[in-house]
Amino acid sequence: MDCLVNNKHNVEKIIVATSMTSYGEGNYRCKKCGIVRPEIRTEDDVKTGWEPRCPLCDHDIVPVPTDEGATLNAHSIYALTKMVQEEMILNIGKTFRIPSVALRLFNVFGPRQSLSNPYTGVTAIFISRIKNNHEPVVFEDGFQTRDFISVHDAVRVMEDLLETESAHYELFNIGSGKPITIADIAQKIIDALGKKDIQPKITGKFRKGDIRHCYADIQRAQKILRFNPKVSFDDGLKELITWAQNSESEDHFDRAAQELIDKKLVES
Ligand SMILES: NC(=O)c1ccc[n+]([C@@H]2O[C@H](COP(=O)([O-])OP(=O)(O)OC[C@H]3O[C@@H](n4cnc5c(N)ncnc54)[C@H](O)[C@@H]3O)[C@@H](O)[C@H]2O)c1
Ligand SMILES: [Zn+2]
Image (cartoon, rainbow, N blue to C red):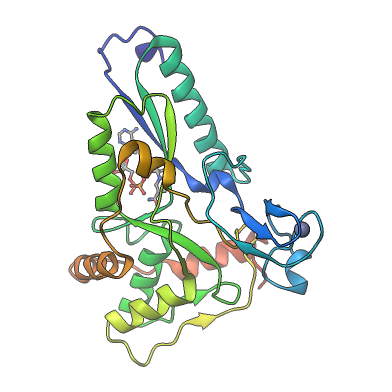
């Protein structure tokens, strides 16, 4: 921090990689109330159905894109640290005139991501499981969605930002803008690895704190940064799998799953 305040090293720009996780649940539309933001579901909530309900009138709601104006609802230590990093960097940047930009990354995936760490991307976890002939384990009913963006698209926007002045002290969602279900991802990886005998294991269990849906509204990044994701999910997945097939990956899922049970974050 002292290094930034005095800018001893002549820092020209800071790009901070923050996270969609700080949103909590994404935006939803209620036919009666318009755009609403449900709270994180509790164990009681999911007893009557996986989908969140309108916080105002309790009717059905449908997920819609989440824009940067949505209030943050950080509900984990990681989400809180990401929220604070964003505030710290933009604040110190403005104060000391060091151009800074925050990118709220959605689920970034691609070659060289960690394959053995059971806490990072679901694509990596599923690939290690399926590669090692184990069924991928899907929480809830598999219809929860996430927004995946290729590492190439995420890196390109960072490179472009180094040369863009109009984005200083702004924050942007960086995602594909398209939701995909977790069950679909499991099946696509099974198909791509040609493991016809493996079926996703849909557990019907709730992992405490998990959101149901959140996908990016990328209009602001499109307009100001000319952000235009080029890698489709299917192409990105093919590339990830090709790379993963030549990389060592240990399947640590069972250990991570047991930890969730021991800490009462998922039912046994
Ligand atoms: N991967 C995602 O989907 C995603 C989503 C939202 C935000 N982010 C953020 O993007 C950043 C990178 O994420 P990732 O998934 O590539 O993580 P990663 O763990 O794969 O890579 C992090 C890298 O940072 C290096 N590192 C850690 N501490 C360091 C230090 N003190 N000095 C220099 N290098 C250090 C590590 O060795 C590692 O190479 C993180 O800040 C993460 O919170 C990632
Ligand atoms: Zn309503």
